Image (cartoon, rainbow, N blue to C red):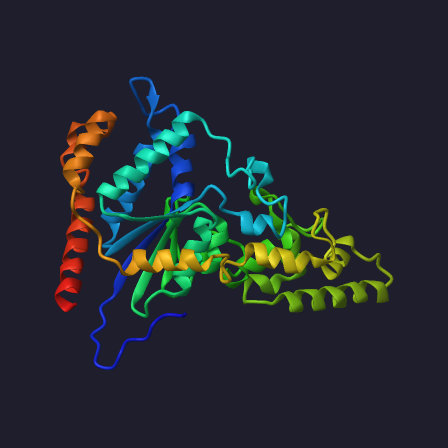
Length: 356
């Protein structure tokens, strides 16, 4: 399903939605602020930074809804079944569903979940679906009047940028969209997935074409900086360039030969391009039917506001020392952006109930 067009006579107002890559944002604070924020000797950097970044985004823009997507115990297994080295560098165990984590990391993730529930932020975790795929599916099926901001550090999501989708990169501390993409990346935005397919991704242990990195690719195919190109076009041009070298008595280049034949140090074999396309392409997300159903319920359902709210969060903040970390000058207004989000959610729920 693509963006739903408005019905005849329907008044359309823009909907602004924030999609948060939960694991990516959590890592920013947990590993980046490990020694900065502590309470009674307990590290609280992951919790504090997560809430603070979401607060910053809510403070900078009006969002009608916020979704946080998390990786589950077996998330990534569908890619592992295609390519077994997938994320092996992170110690992911797709058989037992465990991943090396210290007690503090598990504890803080649980606290973040609890805080967000009280703040009426919609969350979803599925055993087998990665947060990237939830975000990809959501973007592909957004409403016609919906504008999306993705919060992540994952460059894979560049392929999702469009007229109505932008990304806030936590490490860049800035928003990247179609207008300023070239200020941050050397290639045309439409080629972001193709480049990853060819060069691979070290962070996910996805092997690329042997001897080819992005600078090499852009040297041979400078059109990738200016416009969208296809894999077929790349391979065809590589053959032409190689033939030109042979005809002018120059030594054939291994990099071009590897591109033409899909040669890699990885285990993909002669299915290199097929496998890497499946692994990388978020416009064909790996998502199960029951995960889609859960996402639709999360999107369309009304939140239960009973036993939730700012008061619960204030109690938790004092318990976990966030009040001291925030400081007395900021504490009084710290949760104001969340309060406004909750008010919008309540208002929207009331409208739906009246309509029903």
